[in-house]
Length: 408
Image (cartoon, rainbow, N blue to C red):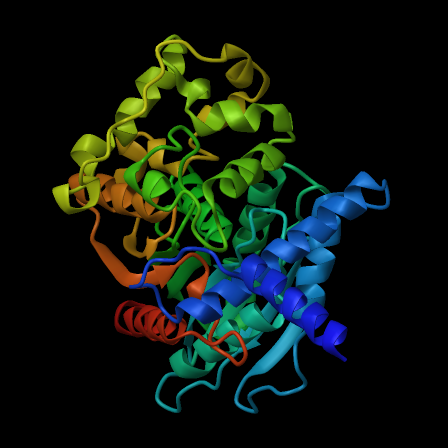
């Protein structure tokens, strides 16, 4: 009996050691966040073990775990019709809210889920619930795109998927089928989905017939650049829950089917060192010493390597493309973008990507709303239901939907 108690105490101590990570006191529901992070870390480690045994690619294994944990419950809103279909060969899930009696045509949002271009699904409970709430509260049609994931496809195939599905939806006969007002269509996405939404918006500026089709874009803690992994938020939140810096850099490398040996060099900005001429010119477009306010810059210093690893950009030139890093787009492209909402979280490596994009858009005359949450963490907006319900998740979702309601 005594030995059993000792063993139990030891196991509990090990579990507590695994779960506990330092988190800022200001973050929402810190102990719940530690448990969520521990679950995600555990899933990552299991998927890497499966990969090392040659049973499956680690991202396929990890996504299987995530989808299994996020299976949709049988409950749904009676006021929202949900349909799985295809738009030009791309799978989508369409959520149709009830039209208002005095408004025969509804507004609409094309939504792109996050997950590092490799994980999650439009059909898991987190995104299914978000889009259901959006459709119900906005009396709108929400088109959630089930784009293909790494390692099934790599950049730029994910972008092609969202472009094809959105162009198909914007056809007059399709909008008419879903009773959508062609002048009230927005695009949105979170994390890597925010990256794809930003890239989608920029790509549409090149096509005259599509330039004015999107009324607004709403980007939720978006990934917007791969040139500088030492912005103040990357330095401040280097080991943040859910998305530490090394995980974000690894997602980038996987997105481009790059060599994982590059990750350590990229973390210290060796891929955009001063001897990589093209990279240096583009980094001027995300000069955070001028784009970020003093309250964000604090005492952090830029990390600019004199010499680095030129092989990285030679083998992964996509790192320097605006299609993958919308933050570095030309001013002419940014000027043509619609009204924009950007949600950022304090405890997130991607915080400064969003703030810098807002600053660049404002500087060329785009109407921008920057919505910052001091107690927020990466991914928080989809965590609104027990047992992964966070107060900041509910507040971010409400603030996002309120903006859409007022502007779409």
